Image (tube, rainbow over all chains, first blue to last red; front, side):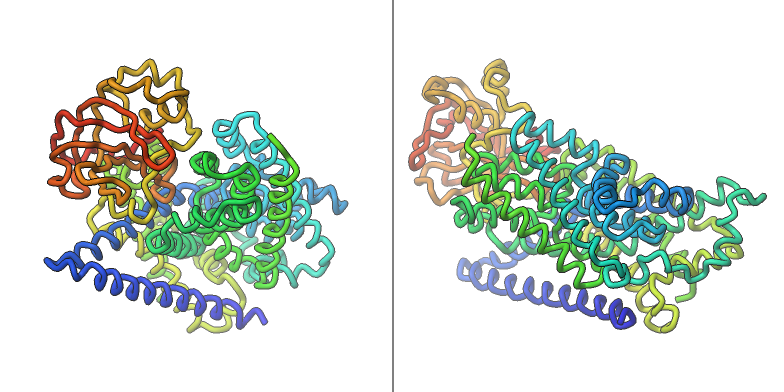
Length: 355
Length: 257
């Protein structure tokens, strides 16, 4: 089953890119058409302006996210080379609740955002981290880490939005992780390449790196291995960053934001709109609190909370990266379960909590 | 693609990517893309990418054989289907050329009035952002306040008319807002919190007899007297221009609170 999966996913990616390019071509054509009646080659100017804006937004997202992705892949390489499998498993509690709590709190020690957390989580899966723990980690770490807690506090201070963000992220990640605790067959959840059993060349690997005390395996060589792993993962996950940033830039070039904002009033619609915005903007969780601030004037607290909780868990680029770690059905759960939970929480907040 | 070539190509791309990031910092165009607060991170990432690229080149072929094997084969199926594997590897790397190509082929340009058409022009300041405090802003001499600061002052004032008559000196790009009358235009800036993906356009109304001669998206410095302008139900800051001077695009085109 897995055999068909990866090339298939690849094909899907190419289709998405193809469709996106086609859309851009069509829309550019329409834009040229619209602005052509002005004459004097204005159509070209409009097209050039659109393309230039698209490129600026794409590079903006990409450049902003690259340091975090790099940090994540570097952390993944360090974990692979320096963290011992047995000691990792020893510190994870056995009980369902305990392990979910551990997963959700793990982010406090790994300050990564949603780009960096995916390669790191997969590495931990390969090291034998149980799937539910890793899923809690994946969902919680982009928010429940020192950097993001600090930036959220800087933006919102001691307000219900700040505490709500931390609490909702914690709860949702534990709940979703808990759901997967009932699926004891992890091969149903993870792609084979993410599981502990994945040791294609284990014996060889052990010879060189596995025996850490062996003479001749110096720090330099180990760091070299970190570099090799980091580079491979940087390219593997990076293409989803590129694709996600391309899609987000297309959307931002083609869909006027005013449409969303005009639709998005009222206690339920506003939440949906802010969730859509979180997915479309695909901004890094380390800074999204400040972006939420920009909307604080025109949106209610529930919808801001939805933006701040759902965005770091699921957006275009992280969903694409999930496909590299989990089976497709798992990804579907990872996208929809938090969506429903946060929808419920945010709408309830809008209806029942008064500030 | 052989493993050796794959590794070399990987190393080359990482070095180029690192150089690309560093060059954007070097020529200053990095601020077209992200808030300057994050430039230090990009600098570190650029250096880190180049370091990794070096480390890749230096990994000796004999040792890397199996590591290569382990790391490049990301799932079993790739081992069993070498053709698939090869195409996977190639495309895997090709994606990272997209930012390089876009960055090198198209000239670096900040967002301008075209982006306003898509994002809308905000005439009311977003309620909070770091440093938005009336008491602080009042301390800034009127001619040193920027567009955003004027907007915040008007937003937080009980009666914006109290600022009427103060002299303003602001820079921004010309935007023709359909809500305005002839003889008026909007002087706009983008406000950036993180990167251009979250840019918000903010603007003040300028009224001047020269208004209709200015070309859209050109940068101007407007000096004049502040007054409160009724736009729909709201009083927003406006300038009755005494002088409008064309200026080159500033090195930092965005407002970065």
